Image (tube, rainbow, N blue to C red; front, side, top):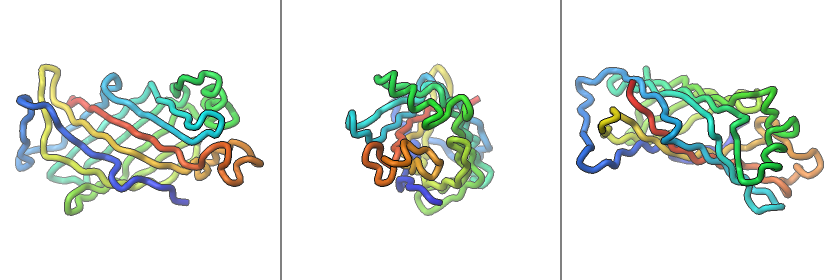
Length: 202
């Protein structure tokens, strides 16, 4: 089963004026950039008729990007999200979402993504891999744009990426109710995940 992913979900951009440095890829080799959790975010939202929209954030996650500009097929992305770290302003609803009724956080403590391939297209890169949610693994493929810039400051060298995923929860057997889930009336079928990742060079 396939689920919807927005056309461009990774957009690497560098904005630090006067500290920005153009990079020549001619002499570059593979480098590992580790996600800085304090400077990154993962936001989720889904339609919920009782409050309009349930918005939440994952607070605990980690991962890295291994980037090979000259041999892009060797590049890799790994992301691990702690399921129980999901938080919103509705604490009681959070408990329901994390319970056996939906995400089953105790049984499935992590949501993960690991890329299996990188491809260079005309004006973007295409990544394919496996995403695991609720103990179910599905293929995920998405494009991302990459500017040939990185910036350096006193803390080191970074890549900054952001994007959006749209995922059908039923593809991962996340069901609100056998009765009410027939048409997604109470709870929407699509979860939108917006994220920004700042990753530091090791």
